[in-house]
Amino acid sequence: MQYTADPHQLTVSTVAPTETMTDAFLLTYRMFVQESEHMRFINPNKLISSNLLDSSLSLQWVAEVQDVVQKVHAFLREKPIIPIEFHLIDQQGNTMSESPTRWDILETILYGDRSHATPALRKRLNNWLTTDFEDPVWGVLLMDFINILAVTLSAIQHLAHYARLELARP
Image (cartoon, rainbow, N blue to C red; front, side, top):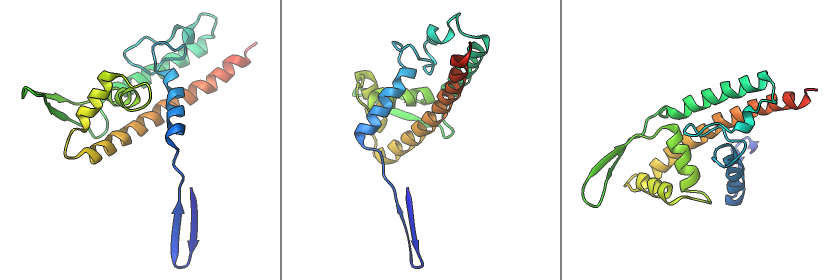
């Protein structure tokens, strides 16, 4: 971000990441989410990777991992600060309501919009966006998604600190 000011005008210039940069980031982020990864701990519906709790690791490391995982999972199971409620009507006229948790939002955008999208989550995202208010709904979802990323990345950073301490152990 760059600010340029003169007495008559303030100019702000920003550079947003490209689609390729965004996809590369999210593909890397997924190693903390996907069941098949050895670093997974974010998905509240799956067990934490046994590699993160291996018996060769210090008690301090294991305690920190368990504490972070508990806090991340509790955060993800909650509704966003501004809860969203979707009222969906199928082709037969049946109505279904859905009020997604933070995990629902993270999972749906991560696996319903970006590369390696799964059909069920792409369908869920399309259902959420099938409205006359698609742009504002997408904006709210992205705002929540960014907040979720910030919290979970903070957890990853916290564990990275303890990983450095763990690696420095004799």
